[in-house]
Amino acid sequence: MQFDYLNSNEYDGLMSIEDLRVLRLRKKKIESDKKGRKYILDINQRYRKMTTNKRNNFLRKMNPFKKAA
Image (cartoon, rainbow, N blue to C red; front, top):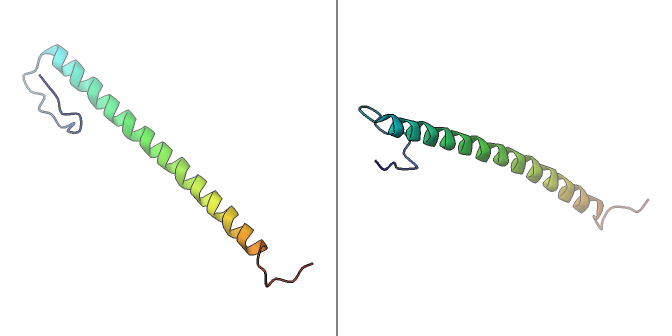
């Protein structure tokens, strides 16, 4: 029996024990992949926020119209 990797809602009635085991492992793998991608997305968003703040602060400091101290 072949499973579609993207479609985790496979029909699991009247399947052999081995097919059920494969289906369960595949569902676990998909869920862990989703959690991993979400974690990486959160890290990337925090990093982008930090770099944009640094870039904006740098540009403000380099303002040519600002008086030198």
